[in-house]
Length: 104
Image 1 (cartoon, rainbow, N blue to C red):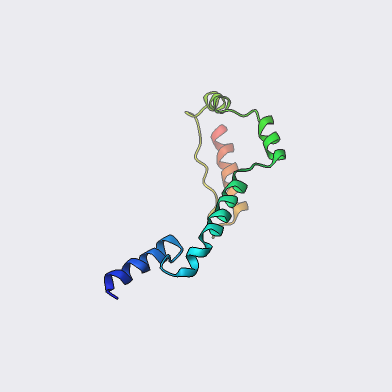
Image 2 (image 1 turned 135 degrees about the vertical axis):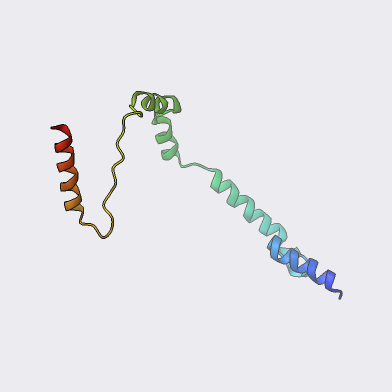
């Protein structure tokens, strides 16, 4: 056998999942295709309870956009969380003290 033929069959085995050069695979091919089709149909079916829950969901893109329009995005404060080596309580105390001094 030539190396080109071997390379083609190796490509088929690796990329297609089935090595079509072997006679046993051709006999099982209809059953494999049927199983794959059944699996795709099962994935396409949605649970009725989930479908009902999705119908009750009233959140829309427009409602979320309205929430964003109402929020004040121009006046915000960048708050840094404590680093791993910092004690979170001392950082919180420092921030509270800074806010208190800023408001006075």
